[in-house]
Image (cartoon, rainbow, N blue to C red):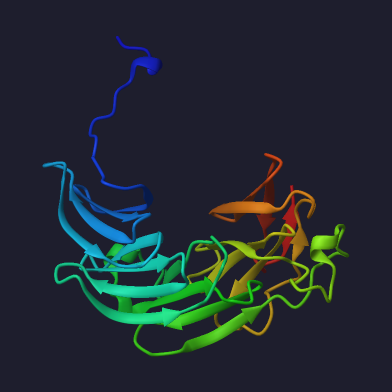
Length: 256
């Protein structure tokens, strides 16, 4: 019996350029977004790309399949959100964020169902904007933004020059991660910022967070990414630490 060190991949897909984003759209189908701006649909049985199209002029940071893979959403490094008809490779919708953050776009279905089980028209798209502490909320059925969610100030005084209030950048820095919180409901999401400020938003009440943000680390070691499972948020920072936050039913947060 082979040891874990001898394990070999079941399938190897050969790509012409680097791949930045992946999303399964079925047991045998995979979408990939590349550093060259192309999106590919892979047939895992044949191990080849059956569809390939140019989706951006730069890196595709996010590709997400919707509606049983009939459509997909792409987010480019240049700050463009686009919805595509996969089979026709035709663009159906576009929104410009001008965002310089590498935070990946979040798509939430209004029913809380898996994205492959719903059409794009029943989804909401959330992405950081040019002012990186502000999140834009978009409806794929309309042009422009549905609303904005801005964290007004950090929960604590900044501890280094990079986050001084009144400086060119906001004291929270860029939004580094936006993740859904389905345990609270389909309209809830968690956001983590460079300063490590973390808060919960409800799309139905976008004027302010559900509860005050908490700082889960120190701005000297900025937040890099985050993940959510049930009512917990894990925030990973530049120093290698991973901090765990408990989300209470009312949306308040407690550092564990």
